[in-house]
Amino acid sequence: MESKLKKLGFQGSEKLKTAPLKHSIKSVVKFLKENISEDDHRPAISLGLGDPSCFNCFRTTTVAEDAIVEAVRSAKFNSYAPTGGIFIARRAIAEYLSNDLPYQLSPDDVYVTVGCKHAMEVMVKVLARSEANILLPSPGYRIYETFANSHHLEFRHFDLLPEKGWEVDLDAVEAIADENTIAMVIINPGNPCGSVYSSEHLKKIAETARKLGILVIADEVYGHIVFGSKPFVPMSFFGSTAPVITLGSISKRWMVPGWRLGWLVTSDPTGLLKKCGIADSITNVLNPSPISPTFVQAAVPKILEKTTEDFFSKTIDLLRSASDFCYDKLKEIPCITCPQKAEGAMFVMVKLKVSLLDDVEDDTEFCLKLAKEESLVILPGLTVGLKNWLRITFAVEHSSLEDGLGRLKAFCQRHAKEP
Ligand SMILES: *Cc1c(COP(=O)(O)O)cnc(C)c1O
Picture (cartoon, rainbow, N blue to C red):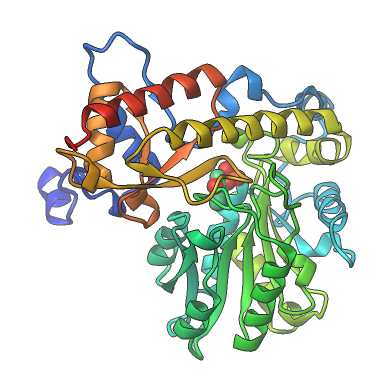
């Protein structure tokens, strides 16, 4: 058997060395963690992944926990759920999203998925056609590229502009689109940049999409996680200008990524998506695919409707002060510049001036040495598409953030070039 497997190309894994661009965020973080020295008696700190659910201060609300327990105990939700999700979950998601819209979504617009990541894959599969292409943001969330590759959907990148609060370079979008472009993806609030788009910018995105005849896929997994001056406005607010497909989940706002409940919603007041068969195509793709646990779906109405404002405001306050603290501490480090303080989500992108450092070639080497010498994990920008930048997660408990940023500063001082 071994020789057959080898012949078929199963020849051990491709080892990650210094080319994280080809690898997922998770595998890069794992690789960096493996490089932490055993001789360092300080605890390892990771500002690499965005999963605050392991910290006590970010524990989800008891409303959500009770809703799950109640659904399990009722013994009414032990069966397979239908494709697209159970009605009460779809209705609750439609209501939840309609609160922010000038029109009403129907439960028929909603497809329950196994988290937002599953919704992303479903959407890529729906759009995959031999000639078609989609436009993706850079820097971005690279699982879109991974899914597009595995389903043979061509993608092209447009830049986000750091000096403009990471807004979409709409001229670039127009320049790279052609007659086979069917969609563009925006992530708002943004991963990896912590950006929040104004209503005016979203309107311009919708107008550009209309002009190009493409749909907008709005990844709003961080919806409502905003703590700067701009409110969260959903892309689907402009759904009558261009059709929008909204992707989301309870993973981030409720801090329960392990519960695997997300959604894909056609926000299409003009009915174009239905007319073109996109809605049917979504059902066809979902039919053979896994479905979120029925009892988690059954808990959705209570989770969305009964969570109290104080849970949300507590989380937002924690993230705001973490973002402020991070911004202030980073200002003390000469080789790092932060063009834009994070106003949403859980991350900030900062530029690394390697020319000010002695023995560091690029962001990847920087992060590798940082893990080895300081037991601190930070994501190299290359992993999200931007070389010589860093993505820092600040959604961790305060003591880790303070300690982590202190180690980052010490590392940069130690490696600074002599003036
Ligand atoms: C975390 C994340 C997702 C995945 O969300 P899940 O609900 O956990 O699958 C999707 N998009 C972006 C931009 C994310 O940061």
